[in-house]
Structure formats: structure tokens, C-alpha cells
Amino acid sequence: MGIHTGQILHQRYSIEKLLGKGQAKTFAAVRLADDRPVIIKELKLSELDNWKAYELFQRELKTLKNLHHRAFPQLLDHFEEKAGEDLWMYLVLECLPGQNLQEAMQAGWRPNIQEVKNLAAQALDALTYLHQLAPPLIHRDIKPSNLIWHEQQLYLIDFGAVQDVMRPEGSSTIVGTFGYMAPEQFSGRAVPASDLYALGATLVHLLSGRNPGEMPQRELRLDFRDYVTCSESFCQWLEHMLEPMTEYRFQNAAEAKSALLEDRFTPRSQRNTPSATAPTHRTGPLQPLPAPVGTKVKLTQSPQHLEIIVPPGMFNAASIFMLGFNTFWLSFVAFWTIMALQGSIFFALFSIPFWAVGLGMLAFNINTIFTRTELHFSPQHIRVFKNYAQLFKQEQHYPLSQLSAVQRALSYKSNNTPHFSLQLEIGSKKMGLGTHLSRAEQDWLKNEILRFSQKHLSRAQSEMLLRLSESND
Image (cartoon, rainbow, N blue to C red; front, side, top):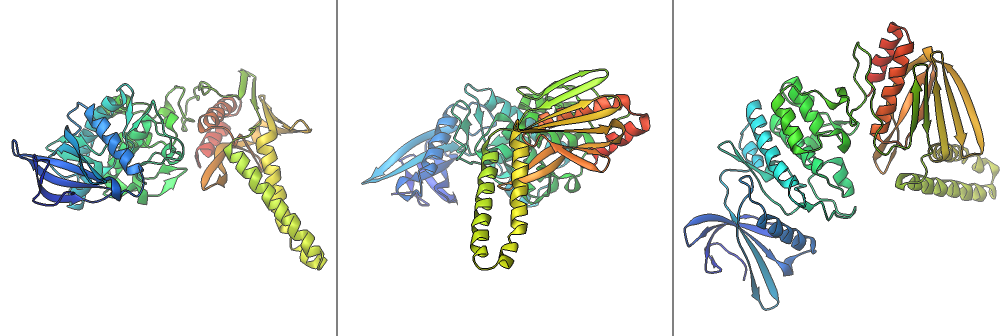
């Protein structure tokens, strides 16, 4: 059993040729009843390495049964064949015209900017359809090889990775393709905006002819501008599609298409919306930003005062990992020191740098997990109060005029994941806080600190503060 070229399958289909191999094989065939070209997918259960391929095959079958949109291939038939203990499963799909975008680019095809925009608009229509189903469906693997573009018509294929958002998968399941996957998919979590990120990465590939996985990143953002040629507004639109934080990305495909068709896209960072990022430098006064939903940071302000209270970070997966590693480090150094002392105090002295690193990590963990920080701004001064686990307190005073920059700065990396803090540069001192806060919270606090300072500093000082606060953001 199993398909081979020239075979008549299920008394209905003549097998033409093998198109692709994997856990499931794909064949070109002809339906005998009307000589219609079709695509047949075959899955043999006894050859599976694991049950994931079976699950993906069944998922694609279920999804295609319920899709009725011109951008998706039509499911024509499905059946099973059994021989002894072996079972073969088959999907029969509409044969779509043309090559997928990956094959087309390998053959030398390069779309112009208008063609890319037309393709993007059709893809967003298809995603709007998927995401508005009940329950919504997330494709999770949009990339050039899963898109077909023929005579100005776009088709989206391969629904094995689709996710029903009413039944999200656990964090252990990662589905997608590196370079096109949104950051949240690396932890097994996908949302409708994840498809927008993948589409944005695909469009960058079309414009540059280069896999986005090969491009550099800056603060987790795909740094693609040196590889593409397009208008500033379209570059900003792509950057918004590719925001690493879901709350800063377009929240749905309809919103993304509307912004695309306007062709005068204003970045969310310059809008007065809950999801806005910290503003870029401008000559006028900064606009207030609403507090991010769910934040535990307390901010109160008046024309003459700004008070910010950042609660302790407490425990989460990252902090528990850091504390565990810290405990292991100090325990190992203590054991090594005790053993070295039995030989010679000279050898024990070599442990001093390791003690310094371990105690430094401990101080950092205590500061991040257990420290409550209060910032009090007045027209003349900045007062900083730190309460370390209710054990002791520290108070510092600085002139407001010495505030030179407010930036998000890399604090540390855990499991190769960068963690940022909000950093205030006051004179020669750099003070970091809020490592446990989200990007939205840090950007909100940055904006409010800059907005208050802008009101009470001279114009020259204010412009310098805004300029230096943008330089590394």
C-alpha cells in the first residue's frame, strides 16, 4: 500500500508525481471523474516518529473543512486506507495555480513595492477572516513557502500548525519557523497578532530578497531598514507589524490593513493611546499616556509634584531561576573555599573574585525582588527612597537640573532572554529600577518623567534631556 507514480488511488485519483517528503508526503494527481488537477497528502501511521505529525494532519483536516474563502485551498475529499495493521490517511486538496513565494524568489522573481502592498492587503483580508471565526484561528506559520501569488491573487496554504485560540496549547509546544515567528511563540503562546508579525517578516523577505532570520536585531526588533527600499511611512508600518511586544503591534488585521491603505501611517508611539510607546523627540510638549492596564505602579502628579511608587518585583519564573542559580553559586564557592583552606590560605584567596560575583548577584536579586522604590519629583529636586524588604531604608537627593537622560537599558540576560530596566542618568550616576516591569510600564514611566521634567527645566536643558533619552532607545 502507499502511493506511487502511475497508481490509481481509491479508484478516483491518478497519481502524477511526488511533490514533497516529510512525515506526510505530498503528490500531484488528477481526479478521474473530471480530469481536475488535485494535491494529495498521505500520512502513514506506522512511519511516524511521534504523534505530533498525526495531530497536525488531523488539525489541517478539521480546519480546511470549515474554511470558505478564496484565499484558502478547498478540501475536496478525505479518506483512509488500511492493510493489515497499517493505516494510511489522505487529504485531497484543490490544486492552486502558480508557485509559492519561496520558489518564485529562488527563480528570480522580485515584486515591486505596489505588488508587495497588494499582496499584504489580501493577506490581511485572509487573516481577518481567520481571526473572526468562532472560535478564532491562528495560522502560526506564515512564511513565503506557505503563500502562493498568481495573477494578483494570494493563497494561504498549510494549516497543520493552525491553533484554535479557545484551546491554547501549553508552553511546551513551539510551532512556527525561525525568522518569521513572533517572540511570544518561542514560549508556546500565539495570539492573532502573532500572524501579523509573521506577515511583516514575510514582506521584509519579499522586499529584501533575504531571510529575516539572517538580519540583525536591535532590542529584539528586526533591523531591516538597510536591506529594503521603500517609503518612510511603509517602513514605519512594517516596524509596527514587527513590534516584539504584542501590545505595541497592530491588534488585528483589519486595523493593520486600514493603516496600510492610508499610506500615511503614524506610529503608535506618536499617538495618545493606551498602547503607545515613549514618544520620540519633538519640539512641542510631550503628551500624557494612560497607565497600562493592570499595572501595580502608583503614579500621582500635580503641576508641582510627581510621585512614582514601584512595588517589589516578588517572585516569577525569571527571579526564581536567578535566585536558584545564585544559591548554587554561593554554595559551590563556600564549599570550594572550605576545601581550599584545608590546604593553604593562599589557595583560598583565589575564591575572593567568585565571592564578589556571588554577593553582587545576591544584592541585585534582593534589589529586584524585594525592594520598593519611590521617586519624588519637584521643580528643583529628585528624591529617591528605597525600602529593602522592610529591613532598612535608603534616601538620596539630586537636583532635577542634573537629570540628563531617561532610557530603557539592558539589565541582564536570563536563558538568553534580555531583561531591561528603566535607567535614570543623574549627573555621573546611573540609577536603574523596574527590571520586573513590562515594556509598556517602563515606557509609560519614562514618558511621565520626561513630561514633568520638560515643564520645569529650561528649554535648552529640556531639549538635551529628550535628545539623550532617545539616543539608545
